[in-house]
Amino acid sequence: MDKMSHRLPFRALASIAVGAGLLFGAVGSTGCAGPTAGSTLGLEELKGGIELGLMRGAGWTTLSVKPPYIIGPRTNLTLKKGVFSGNIDSRPVKLIVDKDGIHGQGPHGNVNVDIYDGVDSMTIEGSWNDSRVHFKVTAESFRGTIAVWNDNSGSIRSTQTCQYVLDKVDQDGSRMGISTCSGMPEGTRIEIPGPVQAWLTRQELAAVLLSLLSTPPTTVTEGRWGN
Image (cartoon, rainbow, N blue to C red; front, side):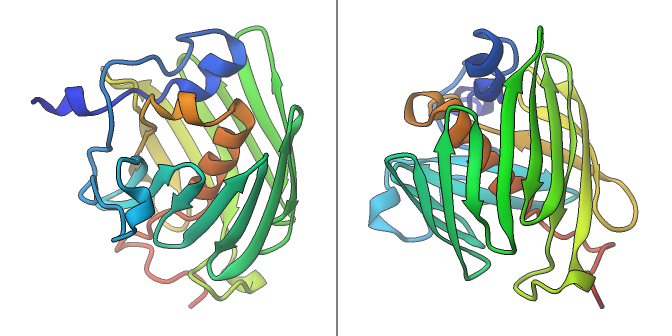
């Protein structure tokens, strides 16, 4: 089976927000194209799940999703009745999702994120881990910034702001462009399989996406932030 048949495009978030097919729409089934595709981290509970993937440079970060579980290299969350609990970077997390957005405690600070629709766009903005987060999603672009931390240190000096400018849409709906966290811009790709639309609400998907974007792979040219 060809590569595209295993994936669904990154359109779920805004199709739920501002009309079907605006950003994500379906052409495949499951899995990301990254080198960790198909991995369920050895957890029986994740068998049959799907993966969300973020590529920067040659590195990938993926989250394996099979409700109520969302698991990745730095993420271990359980979703029950609109509440994400667990840990990110081995720090406790409790995020409450409602019709307006995401609120609660992140791994490195408070979370208070609003999600609202424009005429042909969706905006995600507020504070994530006590730092500003802002993303605007349209049919043509996915742009914004979010604070990230170096590994598990959690210190202020190791905090970086990652800027994502994804202005290209692949045939499968994945978003492509560049991101800059520390050093030179890196080629970037985000893949969100379409079946996630049947599993998560718009707000829940936004919370998972912010968790992914705030734990990106560090490239060779960036080294270890905060050193």
